[in-house]
Length: 86
Image (cartoon, rainbow, N blue to C red; front, side, top):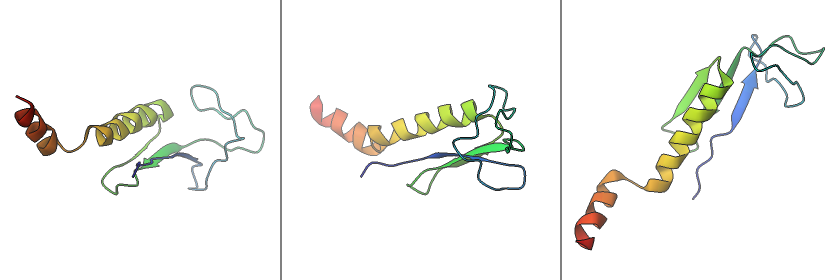
């Protein structure tokens, strides 16, 4: 099963900031109805990882690193497979 960790943006009051609310790279709103983008959040479907930070880019990079770790499999199994291959 492929794990997912979707990014969601939120306003200061905790409400979801819709995808059509565009922002500058620093997070300032470009949409007239958007008060702000206070934080970005991602939670993995594995249940063992989540992040909530003000920097969208940082959350996205961390999310990508975490999801890549799932494709590598557990370290114990990788080590066992290496032992069998030698």
